[in-house]
Every structure is written in structure tokens, then in C-alpha cells.
Length: 112
Length: 114
Image (cartoon, rainbow over all chains, first blue to last red; front, side, top):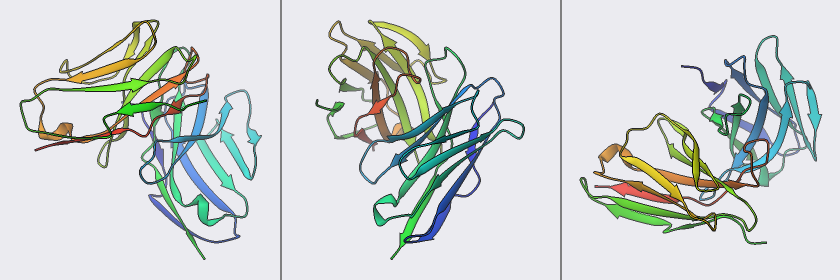
């Protein structure tokens, strides 16, 4: 089957540095992509999304990049803070499917 | 506005039993989705409901079922529990058409099957 996956299961980042979390997807029909953050004991929290007709989208301290040629998605977090420590998931959705397919997740740990 | 609520938060059952989990969406949200989260399989889609109709279903056995009520609240049921059903069950609500209508997740119900 097709799936969305993250390149690295863990990422350790120095506070104040920028973080880059990568994700590869395989379903070429997917036209919508989302990044979620999940803190311990909580459900996933929406961070940012991007549609397939875009290659970059910026939010507050976060940027999502989409490379459809190589089916790659990335999340950049600027000036990483201790509160950014969490598990980050990418997710994809084909049109009109009403569901998300999630990647395995990357655990980000911010070092003080 | 209150977020998505799920009850109970924790549940311990034994093999062979059945369980019902409840989800109350954000007020005004009409779509409810359910996901199973395990360390080995990650987050997997179970089903999605809108206006009491199931619009999509994931690749889970028939032991997993759900329903949605006229007030958009949803329940999911797992019958004949197996050890492998131990997981965090997450509910997410959105206005009408997930995932392009942002899905808001609840804290989940942690099910342990002994």
C-alpha cells in the first residue's frame, strides 16, 4: 500500500537553532498535506498545511516546503524553543477522501 | 469554545470483552473521524462520519464499528477485544469536509486489553 513516512525517527536540536523535519510521501494522487504536533498525553495539534498547487507556505515560525517532483515534504521551525519538543507527524490526503494517512512521526527534543 | 472531548480517558478490558468509546465534537462541527494510534503502526484511520453517515472506512476488521448521532456526537465500538487492540483511540472533528476543513483532535482514550 501507499504510505507517508518520515526520514528520521528522532531529532535533537539546540534551543534557538532552526529545525528541519523531513517526510517522504508515495501517493501521487495526494493533493493536501498537513503537519501535526503531538505532545505527551495530548492529541495531535494542527501546525500548518499546504496544497499541491503550492511549493511553500509560511506560518508563525514554521515553513512547510513541498517538492512534488521527488514527493518530499519538510517542516522548518525557526528559533526552536523548549515548547517545540514533541512528536511531529506529516499527513497526506487524496482529494475527496475524508481521511488522512499519517507518517510514522519524528520525535524532536530541544536541548537547553 | 470547548474542544473535542473523549470519554473515558482510560479503559482497561480483558480479551473477548467489548468496549464503547465516546466523542463529543466541537460545537458546530458535523464531521467526526476516528484514528487508532499504536507505537508499531502509528496513526491509522478507522472511519469518518458526517450527518450520521459513514463516508469512509479504514482497513480494520468488522469488530470495529461506529456511529454518529443527530447532535454529531459519535461512538465507536470494538467487539471481541484482542490484545492487539490496545492503543490510543483518537477522535477528530471538523466543520464538514476533513481534512481540508481543519481537524481538531481530542486527547484520546487509552485502551488497554489484558
